[in-house]
Amino acid sequence: MEHVGYRVPPLSRKEIEIRTNNIRRVFGFENIYYFDIVQFLEWVLPKIIHDFELIPVSNDELDSDFARSYPDQNLIYVREEVYINAYERKGRDRLILAHEFSHCFLHKGISPDYAKNHTGILKKYESSEWQATVMAAQLLAPTYLVKNLSIGQIMSKCGISESAAQTQLNVANDKKLQQPIIK
Image 1 (tube, rainbow, N blue to C red):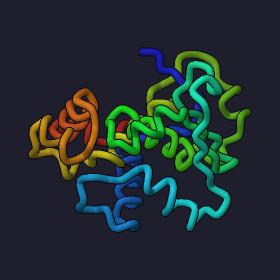
Image 2 (image 1 turned 120 degrees about the vertical axis):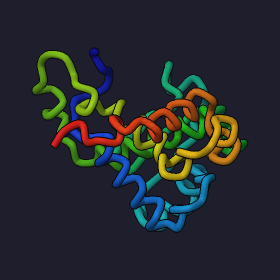
Image 3 (image 1 turned 135 degrees about the vertical axis):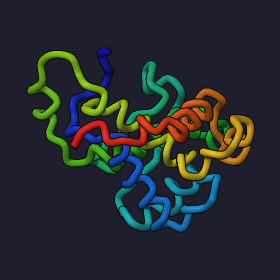
């Protein structure tokens, strides 16, 4: 299967989960279901990364993108409607912000030449988009917290969409997905 995104150094799902779980642990969210991504990006992250900025922009400034991250500039642009919806706890928009943060966290310092020097089909664990999606889902609904919940409970407790809740529940209960994809 062909995956979208830029080629980045490979990371397994397990490696991404470990990094994400460490973020939750360091910031005291290890056993808390609802990770407030807006508060984290607005108030917590700028205290650690002093030049980090989350900038809401008019809905037409990002073309067809809902948000766009610039990891090496510690910058995320987000459509106003997505920012407002995330603030109002709408699952899809919370996931969009978590996804862009994941790019900033995982892909900072990766040379554009790394992405350009690739020919052929992109493996999922080398896809910037796949990696950011896995991290975003784990940040908002960690598999270790949701494995014994229903989809409705995951949606309610973690503030994510039904499709994201279903995916995380599937991952949490699929032993094959818990194994490293690469070594």
